[in-house]
Image (cartoon, rainbow, N blue to C red):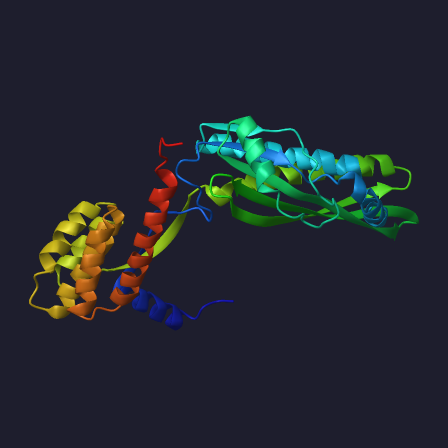
Length: 335
C-alpha cells in the first residue's frame, strides 16, 4: 500500500521535530541462579535412568510412547556432555567432572524423583572432591506415533517431546540451589513401514542433539548474560543541542557530554533538565551508575524532566542487579 505524499510529509516533519533520539547499549544481567562464591568445582551426574523396581511402570510407558532405554541413555548422556562443555567454556569453575550414572530412585517415566539424600550428596561430593553437584534428575524422550496416507504409502510420523529436569545441590549448606525443567519438541517424519529402522535412527539422532542443547541451555542458569537495552536522549534544548546530537550520532559521546554538561547550568529549567538527563545517559554509558542516578534524580526532582523518573527506577534496578552480579563473579579462595 502506498503512503500518500501528504501523510509521508507529516511523518517526516514529526520525526524531524522529535525532541529525542534513541540509542542502545549493552548491559550485563546476573544469572538466574547464584552459586556460593566459594564453589570452585562441580560434578555432574545422571540419575534419570529408571531403577529396577520401576521397570514395570517404565515398560508400560515405553509401550505407549515407543520410548526405548537406548534412546533415553543416549539422550541423557548427550545432556551431560552439553552441560559439562558449557560449564568448562564459562570458566566459572576451576574443574568440572562428569560422573558415572547413579541409581537413586528415578522412575524414568516423566516424573522427577525425590531429592537425593544429603548423605548421598555429601558422599558424592566428598569422593569427587567438588563443591556443588549438578544432577540430571529427569530425561524423558516421550514419543507418539501417527500414520499419514500419501500416494497410497503409509508414512510414519513420530512426535517426540524431550523433557529434562535438573537440580543443583549444595552439600555445605544442604540447600537445593535450583530446580528447573527444559522442554524441546521434535518432529521426525518421512519413514515408511519399509524404512522404520532409518526413522528410528533419525529420531535417536534428533533426541541426542536435543539432549546436548538442553544441557548447554541449562548452563545459562548460572552464567551472567548480556542484553541490548534502549535509551532515549534529548536532542533539542538550546542551540548547542544540535551540535551535541551530531556528535552523539557520530559516536563522539565525550564531545556531546561536554556540551550537555555546560547546558546543565542553563537559566532555562527545561534546557537544564534535559541536559541533566542526558548526563545521566552518559554516566550509564561510562559504567558510573551512581553518577547516572544522581543526574537522573536532579532532572526529575529539580526540573521535572519527562522520562527522568522512569530512568531513576531503571537505574535503581540496575544497581540491585549489579550487586547480585558482583556476588556471582567474585569467586573467593575459601573452602
